[in-house]
Length: 90
Image 1: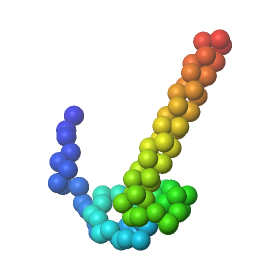
Image 2 (image 1 turned 30 degrees about the horizontal axis):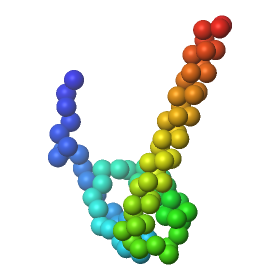
Image 3 (image 1 turned 180 degrees about the vertical axis):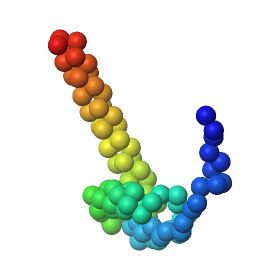
Image 4 (image 1 turned 90 degrees about the horizontal axis):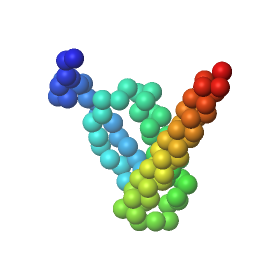
């Protein structure tokens, strides 16, 4: 299988605002995916609030997103176990 050269992936400039700051980034994400990711970040930041310092906000957003990913992983494992149990008993 041929490996993709990361330098050959086209990048575009985007501006990400989280908390009180804007960050200029380059991304390979298409617009729809970028909007979904941005929505998740904003939702997490809004859950935490704007009363905390920027660095603290970024840390809490990271922890919140990691927690959400962990919950999704646990839920998927439970669904897979149930599906395997259903296929064995059929």
